[in-house]
Length: 288
Length: 288
Image (cartoon, each protein chain N blue to C red):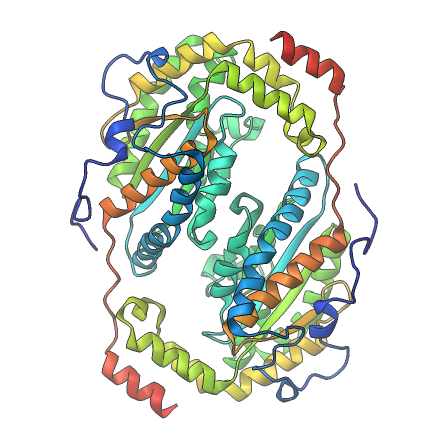
């Protein structure tokens, strides 16, 4: 399998600009309205996203082909963020550019009793992408140090231990060929209010609204603190966090898709060589 | 949940033109180059497919919303056809128009020993779409009366019994809210030869080629017979077969996507009503 690194990287890329540097994290220093790495308007941002489609789906198919022919590599995109930050929107508009056969998308809700009994990472492991696939997590194991911490769903020593468990888990993923890309979709509380109001104003969006969203919203400072802790404690080079400014939907969709594209290029999967004799097979087909 | 039927149907629709009528099936009477229900050129066909995107994704989202709010309905698209008939192409170009979050795609390979021990329908049941989703099977339980019959993978009494087992299974699916739409992608042996040659001529397509494909190709008459039997014996109104002329890729993609759209319109899912007090919630968000 291809092992070359960075062969297709020309510039440092968006991932290095949005990457959370090691050390303490202060989310108030990140502007949710920024458009880092993109100079144009909203309209141009949408066009730029659409223009990524051929390239991103070509790379996706190469990775898929590699997986079909014995390769073990895959990609896992982890999406986290407050309600209305746009985890679903990124999947619809960004991942939607790719061949759905190569995606494995999992949306994590509150764990069931049976899932809880098996440890918080059990259901995460069940949802990992097969070789060649791009896995996408809409929420993830990070909920177990976010809502679990904010809402005291488990005792402090339990959630406290989880940071290290997550680090060990993600180290294991890296060793087994899963490239993990983590994105925190960063919105302002004002933008969340606007989006919740928009959901209430539009009857075709009522199904997306949950009265519990307001209760979570009231814990904004506690969630911010929990996110800062997660972004600080679980941020190794092999599974880095990125803060995606997400008050502008078009930028958010373009940025996450660009990160995915950079990741695929960096893996640089090559079209598998034929594992049969091409000349012989041409003759067999001709004669058939 | 919505129970209205056909509220959005204006014309009899493509599904009735491509539907296999009850009774014996003679595939030689179906033209694989036909463009039933479409009057235009290849270019117009591609444009017509792209033009379906907004409508098909709107209906998909309604079904998804219904599923989120307690609905039990789902759709299952079953794709069958000889190698190179385009099962993957339909998913990429047709299903690719939809939000990948609402899809559940399963590609069935030869069953493992563990799967075989559990009966041929076990792994099929594992892959059924959740409520609100559109399931897509790239190959399916029909392989168990196709390759299993042609290659004598099981004794004749075993595969013979399966037609009835499949009918019972699909009846159960209908009763539990799964609308099954079955498509046989019909290509000519000449077109298959052309497509296999194209795969051999293009190194970026070698990974899709398998020398075993030629062996299967040599059984073309036996497969035709097995397909005719399956299309005749398992063709109830609640899980009908359609023959999709598939020598022209653009027509095939447009036709299957149109069938999906007609199915969704026929189910007519409505946006779920709010299960909370909208006025109260507006005030809560405002105050938050």
